[in-house]
Amino acid sequence: MAYLALVRHGLSEWNKTGLWTGLTDISLAPEGFEQAKKAGEALRDIHFDVAFVSELIRAKQTLDEMLNVFGYRPQIISSRAIEERDYGIYTGKNKWEIKKQIGDKKYQEIRRGWDVDVPKGETLKDVYNRTVPYFEQEILPELKIGKNVLVSAHGNSLRALVKYLDKLSNEDVTKLNIATGEIYLYEFDSKGLIIGKKIIKSKGGQNV
Image (cartoon, rainbow, N blue to C red; front, side, top):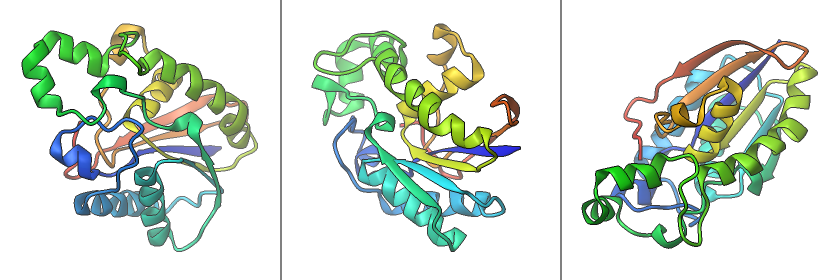
């Protein structure tokens, strides 16, 4: 048996002010560091052999804070394949102002939709098409040989992975929100099949 822990990074400075962050490299807010520490405490009884982390600093800071709690450093592999969704023309804009301009329905489609086009950006389907092959080629083999794996990444890259792991429909994934600092913990058998799952909520986590 092996564990896979998917951890969304803690609250970032742009999350805090309602800005669409995407691939902009923004640091954690003070609250985000605290959420990352709490995530580490929630997982400290599991010894992780490998940690996969996005290239973006908020994911790296989250991982570092967790490792400080663990008191050891597993093998660390960073990859752009698990980075956040590129929000294109909306990057850096205030979500709530955009919502007022385009209406709630269109806003929710852009924010949570499966294959909703964003000019100069990515859809969730695009994110799925880069994260899932990476999972299958790089992460799943580690789980099959019994290694415990930690992934520190982002709301949309993790939504894409959860869609794949939980076999969610295109419609169901639009309802999936992963809060900052939240953990999806899976158990795998040696064949790479999921045999258990739980969600560990983040105190003060936000669906931003």
